[in-house]
Length: 312
Picture (cartoon, one colour):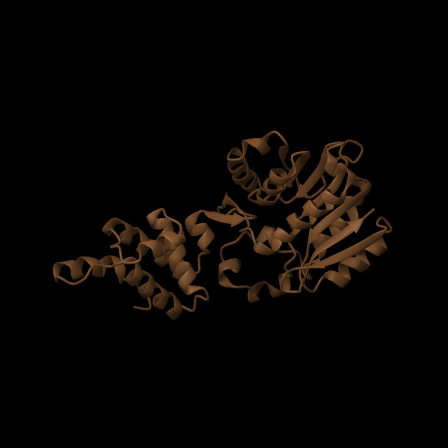
């Protein structure tokens, strides 16, 4: 049983022929939770619920409202295929094709990084920054640059809450831009204010023609030397170009820090997501550039350094 998920789908037909009870939502979830636990999946119960809800085209709450309902045979067959994928450590988000970020559902594919809860801190900081700024009154359009579009989760979340924002979002990957464009079509209120552009960091921009109040990025910051220590869900499935920040993990962060000042308007700010062990190095690097008058690091809800801000 540890190699083949033969439980709910195949056994349901045998049970019905033998006059036994059919597979209910309750029994399917219990069997799958146990099976996932045997395969060392940390969130076995949650994974079972998310996958079953996906197959039944329901939310997770609906599973508990229909806990004793029989799961139809075709749904069990489809569910069994998803179980196979999950025990191979394929991320849930790639299996279901969606991930929620800042209360918005985004389509995700293996060509883009799966949005993380910690990246919501970037959104929260930018919204707080703008709220406190004179620009929040709508006196002028807020010009914002995102480096690393991915699924579009960051730029779309910001645009949804900042009706005065005009956003340029860059990504080196055309596949990522295609996913972001797909997500953007689901937000017509933002589509006129977000421009998706292919580009490698800031290399394709000209500072005399492109200046911004804010530059925001969740860049690659995983140290290449620690790549093999990552969970298989990350190491084997997510795009390495969106995660690998070079030998120490700070190479791309430093490139952005060095180049961004030329594209910031007076009193503009650079806002970056960083690794928990990179705050001191980033503060030192910002001071060394001579471009920034001050910097600050904000912690996430776990108390770990997560957001680095530098003002010119």
